[in-house]
Length: 222
Ligand SMILES: N[C@@H](CCC(=O)N[C@@H](CS)C(=O)NCC(=O)O)C(=O)O
Image 1 (cartoon, rainbow, N blue to C red):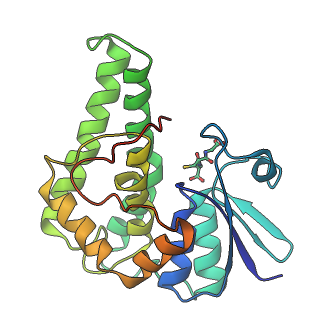
Image 2: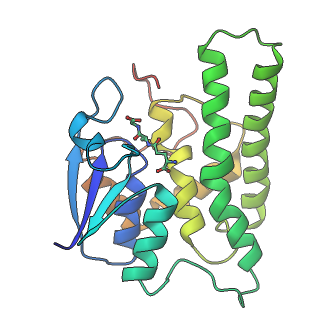
């Protein structure tokens, strides 16, 4: 069996389909619908973590975005999209590569949960969460004002990791990017990549891409 991407619709596993398009890596994609926002039982049975993405490659079954991206890029893509230690932008690359899933997404999710839970706007748990959320978007805006891609001049896995939180995630966590012109220009550059558009068509056929300042009107909540 070759590389199989189990894609939960409108989820982080879109990153894996996008990676394969960027690197022209042959793959199959199996699509799953959410059940009350969660992954269906069939999906959860694939791996103890039970969250998207999950990939299979011969005897290997792997979950967790970072692990799946590193595995595919190094095993099937000659390490492309990962800068090497002798690259001048190596430290920047490492920071932004980890930041996307270790800081940005948790900051957005935590602030969203604090608001959903009805916590008073002045409650420390909410103010801390919302400060991290706005700080995350602010440092991203500052970075992209001066740089084409997150690591600098070169599109890398760091971009691949960050974009979901700025786009499809906004079907569930509806926040505005209206105050962040450099992030919006960056999303235009992302949409200029054929691999991105092809991957989105493959992973979520018919889905409206979320690239503008305002999130889609939707009933979905996470
Ligand atoms: N840190 C994990 C998070 C994965 C995750 O939370 N995926 C969401 C989709 S965006 C999911 O599977 N949600 C459905 C569920 O939890 O049942 C990763 O990056 O792979």
